[in-house]
Length: 442
Image (cartoon, rainbow, N blue to C red; front, side, top):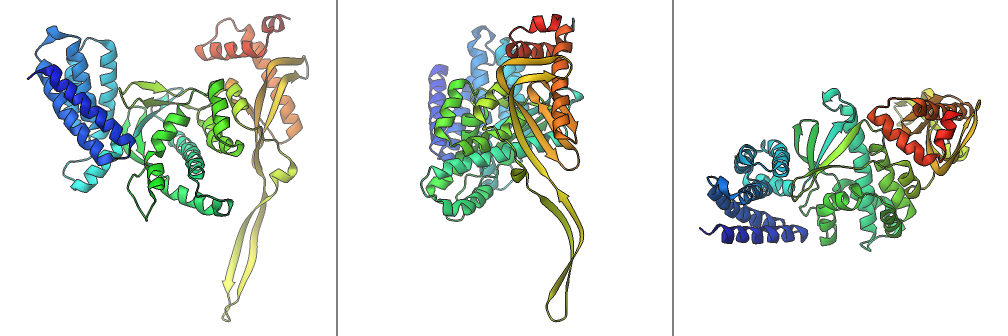
């Protein structure tokens, strides 16, 4: 065997597989990955007893492990992963193999004894999957995450993903305002990613959307739903949201689309979120973390939502008793009627006022978020510095929130020893206030 020739042949099949996936030819892609994995496995085994041929040996073993994962040959992939972890000296390759091992553990539970059709379907879904991990920001329960964290992430992720899918559908052309509600319902049905793998160790999971044609779906709709998760991940979820990125987003999407797609993400990517979100690169299984969305990005991206009494409106919660008479008439009686009000809005300001110490003029506008509900009153919060305040009266609450904000700046500035989180907050405060040292020392 000529290792270099066989390796090059494996790489050709790998390239064909990637191209086939991009073209939606899933079964062809899977077959190409199988061929690539078989060939690269032969090359890797050839290098097992040749430690003098480093770093080539480690690179090939890593390649064999990755290709077998992509082909769904999990047990074979684990053989190369374990060998590499035991014998490779390159720390980057060992780190990548550790990440691959985490995924292999997640992938192992589907038995090959399952029906061929189901196994093939799941294998292709796994090939199309995006791999995430939720990890607590503060290890209150070790590396465990709570169901509340998972629920919050899933709800916001889905809301954002479906808004993205709807915007993509609008661009297909077969869309009018008259069909808005129908289209939203259809998108809600077909854009519903399934969890293809999960594993403990923080909370690691993979998601992919259905790729099979159902209910006489057009080719355009089929391509949309099959590729929506990877497209969303690439274009939206991991977008760094630099100034030029935000400009491009606003050129491509309408104002309402931007709000619907990105507002849910500002919740799960805020500094206040109790978890951080990791994801694995599908090519080399490097693990990266999603950047937080900070106030400056939020203010440039999201339309400021101001509230009026008409906007807030009135909601009623009713418990109604209904009874049908023998003549077919229905009588209704309201047992409990409760008025509810709930709304979220924003306040943009460049001034933080203290009732005792005057005002601080900021170098840029910030967005203070306000959530109102009938049970708790007003909640004022600024995620970038983890400041929040509750009050049943709006004006008093806003005033006290400003006082809290002001005193947090002073207290943090005068603190001699700061934690890592406090140092990050202090660095941010210094970008908001030009002469902060003078303010602290007065």
